Each structure stands twice: as C-alpha cells, then as structure tokens.
Image 1 (tube, one colour):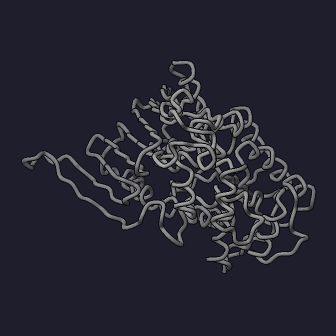
Image 2: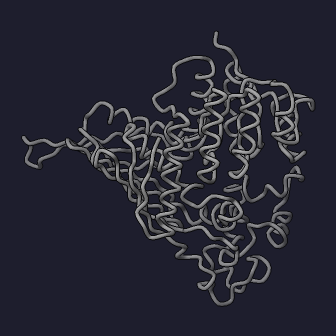
Image 3: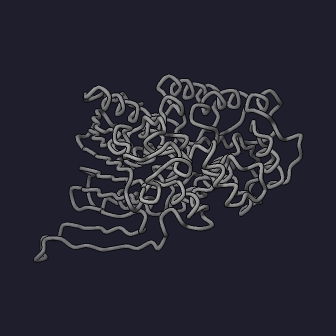
Length: 432
C-alpha cells in the first residue's frame, strides 16, 4: 500500500481548494492536515471541510514556516505576487510543494526560487494543468511516436470568452498589471507557452516577438451614457453586453468563486445581498471601461526554436465562446484539434491517394473545462495532483510531469515576449 501524503494549504482560495478536493476523492492517497490563510473565515471553513483542528490553522505562510515541519507538502495557491515570498521559507523548512502558476512575476524572482529549490533539493511542481488534460497528453504521445515526423510549426490560439475576460482580466484580480504583478500573457497564457515548449520536446526557444494591446476597453471608448457602476448609475445597462446584472445576477453561479468572495461572511447570500454588493464595493459591479485595467485584451506571440522550427500563440479576449485550438505541422503530416470539443484529427501524407493525404479523427468525449469530478481544464487539474502525490511516494512520474527548469523556460519566454511587445523588438531567450 502506498504512503498517504499529507499536505497543508497555503492560501485557501479557489485553485488550492480545487487541488485539495483530490483528498476527498482519494483519501488513502492525500490528506489535507492544515491551512495557512490570513482570512479567519477561510481558515475555519477549510478546517471544517477537511477535519483538522485550530492548532493546524495558521495566519500566514511565515507563521507556518516558523513551526517545525508538520506535513509532507504544501499546496501553494496564494496570489501571484506572493508565490515566491511564501514559497522560499517553506522550502527551507523542508516542504515539497505544488505551486500555482505563474510561479513568479519577474525574472529576479524566478531565478531566486529556482536557486532555492536546487539548494534545498525539494520537489517543486508548477500547476501547468493543461499538460495533464487527456487531450494534450494524447497529442504528446502521437508526437513521440513520430507519426507526423519532425515538428516544423505549432499554431495555438486561445479565445477568452467575454464573460471570462470581464470577470478576471478587466474587473477582476488580474486586470491591472501594477496591482497583480502579472501581464495577461503571464496570468492567462503561461499555460499555452508551456504547452508549446513541452510539445517541442525540450528543443530550446531562442527568439521571440510579440504584438498586442487593449483594443476594446480603452477608457476613451467608453460609450455615451455609461456610468461608473452598472446597477447604480448606468443609462445603457440594459443594452450593454458587459452589464454586471447580465453577467453576475442573471448567472449568479457562473463565476461565483470570484464575484461573491466578498460575501463569504454570509452563509447563504440572497440575490438582494448580491445586488447590493454590486451597487456598492464589489469590484465586479464596475463599468468595464472604468476599471483602471492595464492588461491587453489580445496578443500574438511568434517563437523561434534552436532547431529552426517556429510557433505562434494568438490570445484573443472577448469572444462569444471560449476555445483553445491547436495545429501542429510536421514533416510527414499534421495534427489539428479543438481542446474544448476534445476532438483532434491526424492527417498524413499519402502519395498513393488521389487527394494526396489521409486523415483520422479522434473524439475523446471529454467536455473541455466541464469534466465533472476530474476537475476543470479538461480533466487536467486532479491528474496533476495525482502525479504530484505519485512523485512524493517515490513512484515514476507521468508523461506530463514538468520540472521547475521546464517552468523557468516557459516563464522566461513570457517575460521576453512582454519585453518584445513593449519595445517593438525581437528578444533573445537564454533558456536553461
């Protein structure tokens, strides 16, 4: 029987609690034994959910690190700017760590954590969950098989829906780079950059160029008659696609974990409570053209690899439907698919056929980000946790396993892409 791994949540927010849910599904594999969070309500709710006492509730990562080590690992789900400051003392205390992405917000932090991980020899796994989604894992296995030859070009697109863009990257926590510490490419698309590097099987990226801007939500484009708060002083709210009423009252559960966190002190907030919140101090009640947001709503990235291959990533925010697409072209064929539909097609060169090619379509029958008990991101979330547990038990990692060095290269590519965008230049990437 495998050893049960014990873990403490640091930052009891949506992501950490989702990863921790693996312990409820597989209690013989993972047990949550503590929490560190400055919010007493979240500490209490986490303790009640996982059945531990107040002696295992800590007000901060620093308070936890000041104690003798009391678990095998930490699941760090703090906000982006807190990742490195909270991780370093816990690594030095001896904890292995599952760390939410992005694991840092600048190059200095990145190298500091990398050096501490090497110094302490602790396992640090970054939550690049899309690697674990069965859709991308299947494509990775196809590439390893050589069925399309050498990879010449990878084209990825990420369409961020209008309501996701508004809740997270305009009104929400990641709308202002100066406040959250992360540009859009880092906060949202480090998943996609990581995928591209992983699918290139360790061939190092060498150069990057990038373009993007805030095209739709420039305050200068604020419509006539729009107010500061949708439900308070806006004359055009009934017609506006970004009405807070349409997004969060008509669909109160869609983004509940972001929009209603300010009502956590109420056990069962009513619609009236939610309307009052949006009218007063809830950040999600603000007009999307009056949010002090600074991040881009669309961005294109072009990568060059050491073997001469290229890749592109196009992130477009404000789309009707969320969707990730991928098209990989090799020297013998290609793979093209839509992640959210869990369908991909393999095309190969066929000199004997009249068309000159043949194809096979595969449907994995997994519904994108809505795959039930397996978590979100096409089932990748809890498969990531399973792999983390497996590694700490001393078992072989899965095909999708990522090292911190892999994550360093992905984050470095993002940082250089942002520099390229802001300076209208092509930037070198000195990958590890």
